[in-house]
Length: 78
Image (cartoon, rainbow, N blue to C red; front, top):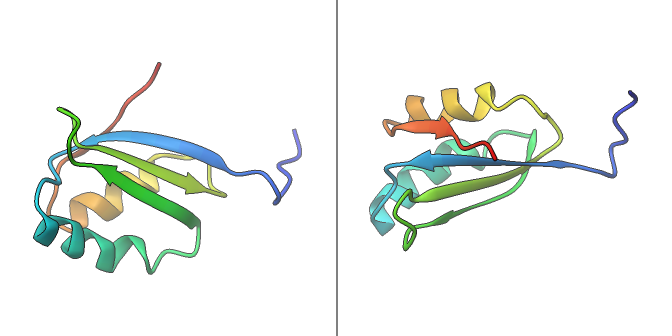
Protein backbone atom coordinates (compact mmCIF):
# COMPACT_ATOMS: atom_id res chain seq x y z
CA UNK A 1 0.00 0.00 0.00
CA UNK A 2 1.35 3.39 -0.96
CA UNK A 3 1.49 5.76 2.00
CA UNK A 4 0.40 9.22 0.88
CA UNK A 5 2.35 12.04 2.55
CA UNK A 6 -0.91 13.93 3.14
CA UNK A 7 -2.00 11.34 5.68
CA UNK A 8 -0.25 10.67 8.92
CA UNK A 9 -0.60 8.05 11.60
CA UNK A 10 -1.51 8.76 15.21
CA UNK A 11 0.59 6.68 17.56
CA UNK A 12 -0.46 6.38 21.22
CA UNK A 13 1.81 5.59 24.15
CA UNK A 14 1.71 5.11 27.91
CA UNK A 15 4.47 7.18 29.57
CA UNK A 16 5.60 8.50 32.94
CA UNK A 17 5.81 12.11 31.72
CA UNK A 18 4.14 13.97 34.59
CA UNK A 19 5.41 17.47 35.33
CA UNK A 20 5.90 20.55 33.17
CA UNK A 21 9.65 19.98 33.59
CA UNK A 22 9.24 16.41 32.25
CA UNK A 23 7.34 17.81 29.29
CA UNK A 24 10.10 20.33 28.56
CA UNK A 25 12.74 17.59 28.77
CA UNK A 26 11.03 15.27 26.31
CA UNK A 27 10.09 18.20 24.02
CA UNK A 28 13.79 18.80 23.34
CA UNK A 29 13.93 15.38 21.69
CA UNK A 30 10.48 15.09 20.08
CA UNK A 31 10.60 18.54 18.49
CA UNK A 32 13.83 17.68 16.67
CA UNK A 33 12.51 14.60 14.87
CA UNK A 34 11.28 15.48 11.39
CA UNK A 35 8.99 12.41 11.24
CA UNK A 36 6.82 13.93 13.98
CA UNK A 37 4.20 16.41 12.81
CA UNK A 38 2.48 17.03 16.15
CA UNK A 39 2.52 15.55 19.61
CA UNK A 40 0.97 16.08 23.02
CA UNK A 41 0.88 14.47 26.45
CA UNK A 42 -2.30 14.14 28.50
CA UNK A 43 -0.81 14.54 31.97
CA UNK A 44 -4.26 14.25 33.58
CA UNK A 45 -4.69 10.69 32.25
CA UNK A 46 -3.59 7.87 34.54
CA UNK A 47 -1.30 6.58 31.75
CA UNK A 48 0.12 10.05 30.93
CA UNK A 49 -0.80 9.36 27.31
CA UNK A 50 1.53 10.61 24.61
CA UNK A 51 -0.11 11.02 21.19
CA UNK A 52 2.17 11.49 18.20
CA UNK A 53 1.05 12.39 14.69
CA UNK A 54 3.75 11.05 12.40
CA UNK A 55 4.54 10.18 8.81
CA UNK A 56 6.25 7.04 10.14
CA UNK A 57 3.77 4.34 11.25
CA UNK A 58 6.45 2.47 13.23
CA UNK A 59 6.06 3.21 16.98
CA UNK A 60 9.60 2.05 17.83
CA UNK A 61 11.26 5.33 16.85
CA UNK A 62 9.04 7.27 19.28
CA UNK A 63 9.70 4.77 22.07
CA UNK A 64 13.45 5.13 21.46
CA UNK A 65 13.25 8.94 21.55
CA UNK A 66 11.23 9.06 24.77
CA UNK A 67 13.42 6.46 26.50
CA UNK A 68 16.54 8.35 25.37
CA UNK A 69 15.04 11.43 27.06
CA UNK A 70 14.84 9.38 30.27
CA UNK A 71 11.20 8.40 30.40
CA UNK A 72 9.23 5.16 30.23
CA UNK A 73 7.26 4.64 27.04
CA UNK A 74 5.20 1.75 25.69
CA UNK A 75 2.71 1.64 22.85
CA UNK A 76 -0.98 1.50 23.74
CA UNK A 77 -2.96 -0.60 21.28
CA UNK A 78 -6.72 -0.97 20.92
